[in-house]
Image (cartoon, rainbow, N blue to C red):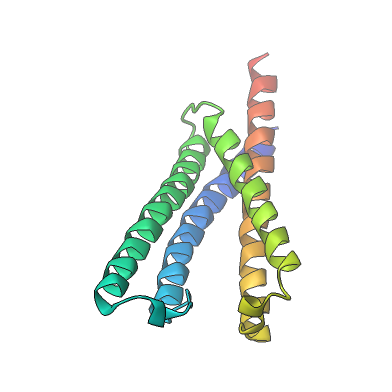
Length: 161
């Protein structure tokens, strides 16, 4: 039983680090898309001054959303790492991880359903498959983190009894 708990702790520590790393990747990927001008629309409808304010508003909005996403990923990752070192944590990080996983699955399904839209047709096939692979890896990491966190809680509860 001790070996099993130790294995869960090591896995949880590794997965916690991975969740944080995918949070960093998410931030980089989003800013790269913005840099390449991912939001395209008829810019002739805006004056240069309005376009400047629009770009600033988009960057501020995206930054706030990324801070929330990265904050949640950091919370889950750091909590998993803390639990792996034997610290007691509430179940809140597990709930947040489950909500993040559900949200990622839902958004991935929406992307697959909207693959035929004009916006996504511009995306290269290779880019789509690489992005899908990275997203699936992130979701698998969250799912495995949930499994190991719940399993470790159960194992520790068994040893307390």
